[in-house]
Length: 273
Ligand SMILES: [Zn+2]
Image 1 (cartoon, rainbow, N blue to C red):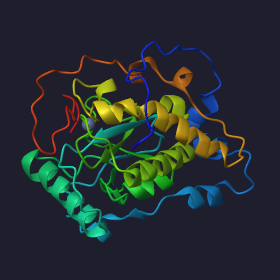
Image 2 (cartoon, rainbow, N blue to C red; image 1 turned 180 degrees about the vertical axis):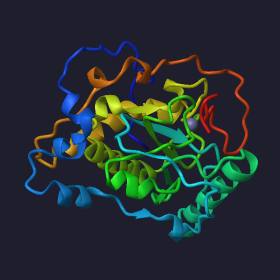
Image 3 (cartoon, rainbow, N blue to C red; image 1 turned 135 degrees about the horizontal axis):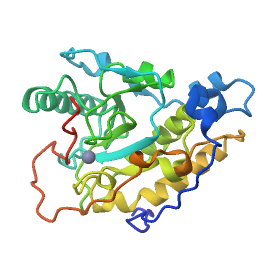
């Protein structure tokens, strides 16, 4: 049913040492990313998907306000939620999912707030995650999340509703994921070919599931096509611009990972809170 396919791994990414990304890393990502457009701000706003805010899904107040870094993240991490592959594709279900994830993260995990920046339901609804995420993204800044252990200071996390060990996401979810990743690449000046990664690229987990992970090469291609369709002269960062410690480590996927609703692998490192 779905045409997505591709090799699951992305090892051996060549690294080049260049200075090309220096201007972007210095804070010019937003303007640099869409340098060829007459009105970059307007273009960014036009590309922003409909994202339902925390007040729209009925979020609880966080225990503490999230930390906002005045810098762009350099990677987009794709997750699954490790919840049922629901056939309720409604907006109200998407809102309820966001509330249940937040309850789990705050009450069971003891975190300050929900951990991811964005959540996409199987109906294709995109919901804001951790507090301050949406304003921060629009400003080209980064909220420190809780979704990929030891890498939360430089990665933006998207949780995709469902369990994709064998099943595939819905077309609505994939379409929303393409749209969301394209917007993030545009805002942050990221190259989709290198910026879109899976949780398992950093931590010992099966997340986002074999099936969704195998779709990432096609996702990168589709997001790249969407960006090219803007006919902007895009200046995007890629692997060559990443510091060594930010590069994926591709740990072994555990064969006996515990199957618990909402648990999709290590989300916080020892020095992260
Ligand atoms: Zn994950």
